[in-house]
Every structure is written in structure tokens, then in C-alpha cells.
Image (cartoon, rainbow, N blue to C red; front, side, top):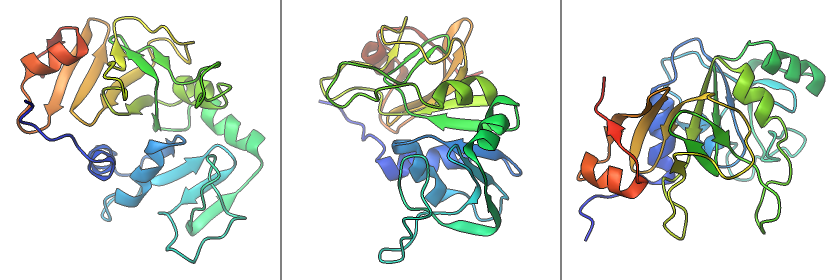
Length: 216
């Protein structure tokens, strides 16, 4: 019986947020990564970008204060911080493709040990039907991080030796933040950054089915 407790979605969002540096321009992908906006450290100036044309997003609005004319790329209502701006999505993609984002945080179906990313699919009931802006983000951002549960509902690991889903980007992911561990993807494979309390590296390697190098 497992003697460790997985991070909740909120705890995982907090874990990602703590690693975002002061002054960073950051895109949070649709799905789980959007929760990171609610946990950004108050003492850091972090500018959030949305691919549908927003710069300077704040946390989610309070219940009853939603403005559905102000939404992120996942169609969720958001807030705008003082100095924030709206603009055409073509300008937004120019920011993404031009290397102006420091970090993007994306969800994933699979991530390879060397950083290949697969975060869209066709033919599955809940599939994302097209790659959207993820390809531009994954290649354009200075760092691409993945935020996801380590295992699927049926217990299959999302961190793999080689992706079997359609690829979004090759060798683009530098870190994978999961509910059980944080991992670095390197040309030589996976490297451990941290583990949840009670989980040891041997058990993590058993769950993933791949070797994990010790922290640097």
C-alpha cells in the first residue's frame, strides 16, 4: 500500500508557481496550468500572457464577478491587472513565435524522457482535436514546462521513453511537474528535482518504468 500522498491540483499549481522567477513573461496553457495564476508569489512581478490576445492577466475572478467578454484561451473568465492590455491574436502569436515568453506551462498526454511533447490527439472522446497554439508556445518560449498528473486514470504513466501520440514539439520540455514528482528532461533522460513526501526514487522509477538520475 502506498505510503505517500499525491499533490492536489492546487498544491501542484503552487509547486509550479514557486519556480517562476521575478520579471517572467509566462503563458499558462488550457486546462490544469491555468490554476497557476491563482498562486503566483505576491512579491514577484510576473506578467501572464494568453494566446487569444491578453497581456497582464490576474487570478480568476470571484464568484459572481465573472466578465465573459474577458476570457483566456480556454474560454475561462479571467481578470486583468492594472496596465494589462488586449490585442489581436496575430500580435499574440508574434510574441509567442518571436521568443518573447520566458516560460510556457502546458498540459500533456505524454512527455518523453528527453523532452518530446505530445499534448493533442484525434480520435478519443475527450481529445483536443487540433494542436492550436501549443506548437508555437512549445518552440517559441525560452522554457517549456509540463504540468500534469504522472499517471492516467487507468494507471498508465504519461512520462515515457518515446511518445506514441502526435508530437507537438521535439526536445522542447525542460521540466515536468506532476502530482508525485518534479522531473527534468535532459538529452540523457530523466533527472529528479523533487518527490512528494513518502515516495522514494525506486518506487518512482517503478511507476515510470524508466531510470531517473539523482538531482544535480
